[in-house]
View 1 (cartoon, rainbow, N blue to C red):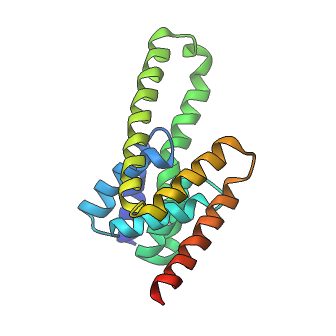
View 2 (spheres, rainbow, N blue to C red):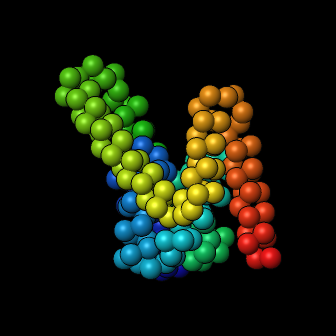
Length: 178
């Protein structure tokens, strides 16, 4: 039970300071879960992010469930998911209660603008980290360019690109092994 509480509190803390969703959460996850607690490796966290992108739901919750499940099974996954969403639920509830009182407040608008800049920096940091861990050769660069332009300039679902990239990765591995 103690470890479940630790999982919940760890993800509660991250959920409370992560604005901007799952990608903005990656640097915090790496610092807290990989470096400090050593619950998983950098390679595992990249794998969890990759899988979570192709699954329905919120990336941050999906990744939290994977990490919690890895630590303590189903109950660990539940504790991690509840931990990561609890701060947002509390904050949204409080904002909804008082929204009409401060939605037009210049200070609040400027604070949100500052948070948006911070979120952009966190997401950029995550993109750079994912690039370094995921794009390791010319095939990776070509796949990146193809998926980027495919998503940017077509209406094809990102799920198709994710599944296609997974298939290419598997095929490439099989060819290299032979």
